[in-house]
Length: 105
Image 1 (cartoon, rainbow, N blue to C red):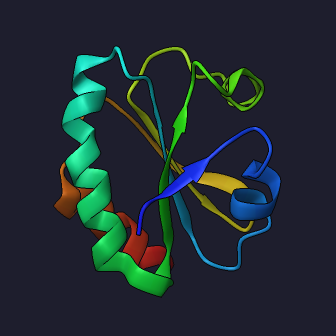
Image 2: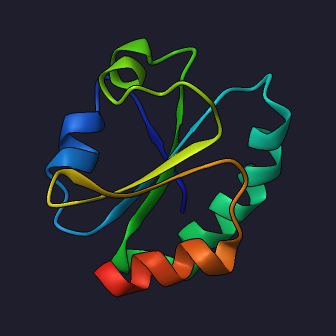
């Protein structure tokens, strides 16, 4: 199931995670972000326990958004071992993101 990341749980759920983590930085008013929604949900189901997949609302979580320099959304960052190993801006295909996660899992 897709997770919701926040300023409060980011350290625990993303930085300290034992598995790769895909974070979709988004906002409700962003059209392309709405298109990413179902892709992120699908990916979360497909990856199961091999990776964490979730979203972070940039409007509600300014601390993390500024820490990672989010300028345009949707922005997708994949973390492994607490660091960003891949990043994408704009709508991405589920296949592409799944391939990236599987190489890290």
